[in-house]
Image 1 (tube, rainbow, N blue to C red):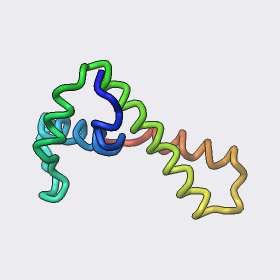
Image 2 (cartoon, rainbow, N blue to C red):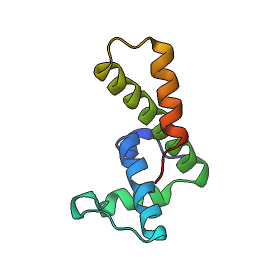
Image 3 (cartoon, helix red, strand yellow):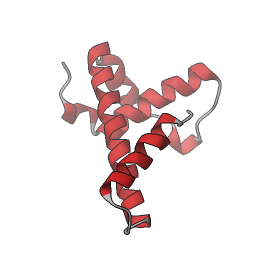
Image 4 (cartoon, rainbow, N blue to C red):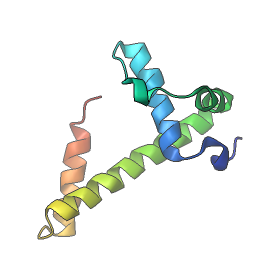
Length: 95
């Protein structure tokens, strides 16, 4: 198992997974979004299980960031409303 510090961050691992998905589905990434050779090497060295774990961490991190953004935009919303909106947004998300 590759240690998390070798990845650099959950963001980088998720970024690489997105790059692979975009190539497979026919949409392109901006030039500054392209993964570097070292990033690709690290991701390829990961087992499928480790890549899945990284993707899961990225998913839950994205939900936390979205919730924080909603709290900042709507400070009057109770936590239950923030959580419901995050669930709704992720349930209807498109990639």
